[in-house]
Amino acid sequence: MSALGICLWYKDIERFGTLVLNPNWVSDGIYKVINWAHGNPRSIVSLTDYDNIFKNEKDRFPEDKFKDIFDLMNKYELAYSKNDGNIVIPHILKEDQPADLPVFPIDKSLMVKYVSEQPLPPNAVCMPIVRHHEDIKSDDEVWRYGVVLNGDKNAMALVIEDDRTIAMQAKGSNKSAYIERLKKTMDYIFGTYKSKQPELQYRVVLTGEDISPNTARLHEDSGIFILSETIKSHLETGRKYFEPQSKSDIDLKPTASEYHIHVYGNVYGDVYGKVDKRKTTINFRDCNIELRGSLNELIRSLDPQKDSDIIGELTDVVSDLKKAEKLNSSSATFSSGRASAPRQWGGSGGCSPTRTGRR
Image 1: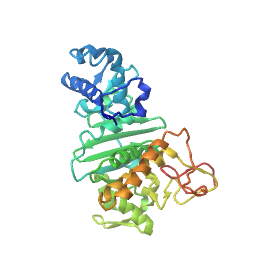
Image 2: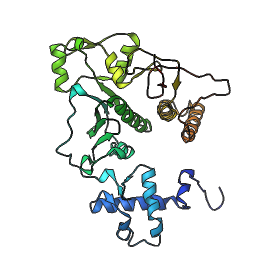
Image 3: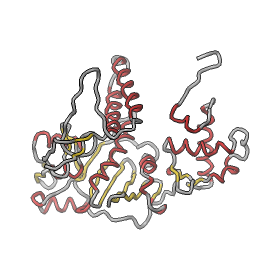
Image 4: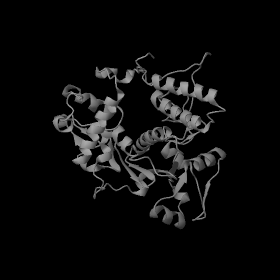
């Protein structure tokens, strides 16, 4: 700090080769692009639109810096790039849902819902659209409040925002892994909000012994949804779930297995209860994101006055985790001033290791 003011350095954007002394230049430039696109209306913006967007401010926004604004919009997940170099701004896409969306039969798909008591932040579904845009196969399958995604390993998903709910469905042989990937994105997004977190609900997977006439009818109508915390508590205590409407007991182990639900550090995977501990690897990035989300949630629950020291320490840890995410490694072992030994978990996905051997 000096008599001239404060200079801030953002290492993440140094690759753009542009020094920005006034941060308003960035925000003003981005807003001009968005407002121009919204006024036309156009959700796709090209570099050839420069003259129309900045026709009265070319001195402030030189043409050779226009692509830098595109890159920043991509980096901060306000837009995504197409193969032709144009960018798509999701929150000004068409509002109408496509008429011919794929069908996701209940008996062949999985579904989770994030249900909020208060209105969701504007266009909450836009960030998952940006993060997973490479799986969008057609411009006709993405709109302002939803998207159809096609994974590389035989999986398809549908993500829709409706009022205070974001619903995600997946089908295909790799549906469990694909919906878990999308769920991690939403967990990370909601983990950064300071407001109360939406409730996560899983659609129950029924097996033959669970299907009574009443449960079958409920399931066929719209599915049976149970809160994440309820599923975990029943798994931890080894109890079945009593469904009040059908008056039936439902085994939640198949649900936990299909959705790879974490319980006591383990993950209920493809083969429930079978664990191979001979060789495991930790997916560092997924673990990092999940841990940061949990720490941010803990920070928000603390009293800023009484717990200021703890909040400061946790905030430093979150900052270090953000830096550590840039490590060029798919696995890692941690220590905190003491000797560390490899940890062993069972299952696959998330912050738990992936099984690499066979029993």
